[in-house]
Length: 608
Image 1: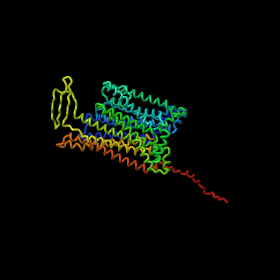
Image 2: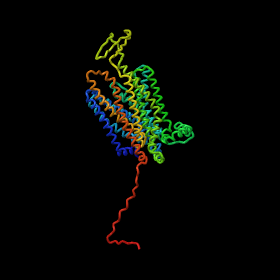
Image 3: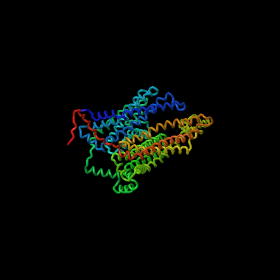
Image 4: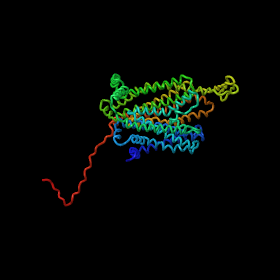
């Protein structure tokens, strides 16, 4: 008997797939492109980071995206691998044989992680170039590489665990994201909160379970908690993997009991609403567009969006109503970054889900056989997305606009006035048209000093508000492009997670690198001559720099969004009917048997 037969089968299948080799080449080329862009930027004297910091900065630029990719591996590769088998009813056939739970789980783990591991392996030699540049020690390199592999393994284990107890792809994706968010940042946030409450130094206790904390401690020169954190992460991952092996043979089948029936009825009512509400919603939306009703009939997605919005509102109220230091403003930026990622993932998953499931169940063919046209189907899906996402998104954007405006104003005020340890007396200096006033206050034992730069003028309220609005416009354009491209990806993908991954990579991640490089070069070329021009002070230039930079970056993002939206929209409208019908297979008749040769002396006998 072959040990781990599914693993052996998956290895044979992966060796014949083009994607196994293509992903490695794409990852290596992406790392080479990022490194080459960094060297190109440092070729300019005004942007150079210095020889001493060239290696460490390049090391950080290459490894932080790798950390984000490894942490998201479970979202797209394993969160729906087992639940998909449950929905299709094929998982039970595997357990009719002598296979065990660990056979199926390890086979799925290998089949889903092989491409991501190969991609990470292809990036390692590019990152190792920083060792020859200098500034990066060998111990730091190998610890960081081990931390990246650990993050990928933990993420895949979390996805498998969630998939073993889930049936719905969107719920599995959301639960995996939430659990990974808690593992990566929950412990660090809890330790930081306890340190702030008790007014003591940060002491990692719950942070030992965080793969992000392990990645950060890999680069510390002093005594760190690297190996205890690594052991804690590995124990957590193997416990999740072992739990998956135990749960999978017991959760794939559907048992029907009286308690189960009551639970299913309650779950159905929670998911779709009561009979009265379902009837009212159907009468209201079916008359407008049947696809609109199919998209909006489930209520839990809207409830999840509103729950996230309410939590974001509570965080906004807590952060901006109290007198907090700059660390709280930094926390606000992290919160909005996580919220933006939730919007991208949720919108891409919801936009692609209908087309993935409708094509798999041949629902699109039935819809196209009715008087509904392809344009009406697409319009109904778009109206459903607007109905579900627009109200909570508008509230979150308003909160982000206010938060960004307040943070920027606070930052400019801190730049203009700084409190420092006291000098011996009050001193007033004037340098480059900027009056620096140092004032001594308090008694001899408790004295503070306020350093005020009178010549410094931060951007005006108009400039700050304009920069914040430009960022919101870029976010709105990105969401529109994500929605259109996700609908097209759902029509051409096997499951919603793969469609979501394609959308995030092609619409957001790859353009982000290009736009960041282009905006850095473009804005620097525009402003460096102004700095070198005589008679123009740097303070006047920096008054308008935030608005011009935000406008330039927003213009690049909007141009990108228009291209992706128009392309995906044209492909949807022109090829929906063709994609819904699927490939046409023309059956060819079997070949005729070969004619037997006739001997020369044979005579042809005709009947009659």
